[in-house]
Amino acid sequence: MNKTVSINFQTAPSGYAVEIGRDRLTTSGDWAKACRGGKAGKAALVSNPKVFGLYGEEVKTSLQNAGFDVFVCLIGDGERFKSFKTLQKTLDIFSENRLSRTDVVIALGGGVVGDLAGFAASIYLRGVAFLQMPTTLLSMIDSSVGGKTGVNSSYGKNLIGAFYQPKGVLVDVQTLKTLPKRELTAGFCEAIKQGAIANRQLFDQTAVFLDTFQPRSFVRLFDDDDDLVRSLISLLREQIAFKAKIVANDERESPDKIDAKSRKILNFGHTFAHALEKVTNYRYLKHGEAVGYGICFAAELSKKLGLLSPNKVNLLNDVVHRAGVLPPISSIDPRIIFETFKFDKKLVNNSLQWILLKDVGKPVIFPHSDVPQSALMSAFKNITRS
Image (cartoon, rainbow, N blue to C red; front, side):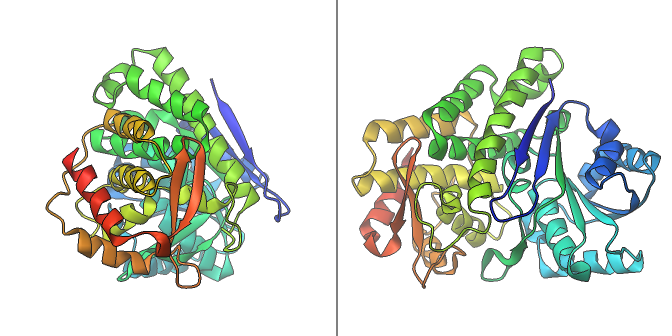
């Protein structure tokens, strides 16, 4: 039932593997040691209290049994903790425990843990080895793959960071059993985003999975339905393989690359999502929930600009709704959201680039200067009405 996705970068001397399976955390120490070429040493295990309470001791014990000297660094749970203050605290713990360049940082948690731990690993002693053990659906298919690390600033999300590839990623689907429904919805919204820009096959596979195994019954079915686990592992493999292919060809999101193979296309739905997160102080919406709105907004905008047919917009909206109920945003002033676009990290030559759709699997990079304000306002009204 286990699957592996290999990532080999065009401009790098080596890549790494994403290993996917069930009950993998019990042998995570052996996996980590293998990723380190058979070496152990010290391991900084970065997590948050909730995830560590569920899986921390199991992972810590496995690492110790494999010969690692483990110390734990716990950070706050939530996007607002992906900050300079948390980064400084993490780096201090590394120093207090005398982590060296021959040691390793291991992230056990969701996207916030992975992004912050990876950034800390990239700048501590100018770079120490880094491993990812994502425990949320969103982090499994997105943030743990591709090497983007960073923290938020007062101006926006992920504006401070580095491209820093892990030495390996271990995905244990068993951790999804303990996810709240909102976290599942958030992860599936990210999966829909990737299907929408990838191809009809991945989009349909995601849609069928959501139709067959609805998030509200996901946890109940997990122990009783082997078909769920097999289908989930297969879906994760295809989702990760798609992202791996994109990032391997455009590791650092080249500003000059603007075709359908550009890493920029992974930002579909994210311009609106990041702005929405910022204006709600990273407390109201899960990242994937914001992406769900971002998908619907980008689809509506694509329709307004004559790129996407109404039928395809309805299809995208339908599949997003299958992922779960999104918190309402109709009370938010859209002008405040639009003002935040000017701080988006995807600005090139001071110009925002939208990722829109001509069809499922046919993303297009579209300049913000060609988007009328009336189209933005109309798109917002449409997604808050539905």
